[in-house]
Length: 277
Image (tube, rainbow, N blue to C red; front, side, top):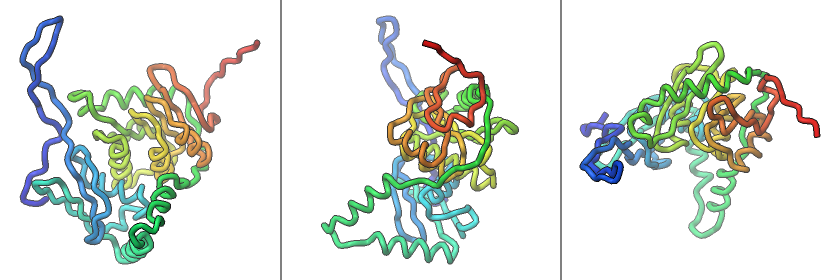
């Protein structure tokens, strides 16, 4: 850490509350957002707003989902530096990976106004994800149990009702890890980083999300290699298309005992209802 202490993940802020038609002074716990900058080998790669916390997990997960590393062992050092303006995550890559990263940075550079940078950005946003081809199967009841276990472990959201969570669950171990953040992408990156740092394999488990399932979350899940993603909310059309192409079983609108399976339903084992017209 730097000389500045990092901000807490939540704050209590004053408000006026209306209850049964009456107003009174009150307070509410709200999540903090702070600017977090990712630098790799001395070069700023990205800056985003996120919940301060789980910094090492965030750095490793972000580097992995961005394709900058293939494992946490390719990171030579990682420093978390708190400043008055935000947090800087300073990542230094191992020599071979550093050369690959430097070449990538050079290939992205181009003259202003040439149009190529915009095309590269569009290609990055819609890039294909790795194919997840393992034949894992899960009982339909596992989806219900897994989602219920995630809800019980959302500590920060329990205090603020304002953050997303991402979790990883396996039949053998139950809920392996949970990470929370104001950003749904950030929560998943933090989860992926935690799994990578612990050496946990994702091939036989379920990624759990409290958000809608957009294309970026499918891209990150595919990088992780998890065969199933289950979410509280509905998916986007692009998310469904990519999950289908890359072999991920997409379960969404998972609430209570009910859920919907959009792609690769063969991984979910249960009794099907047959309706005859």
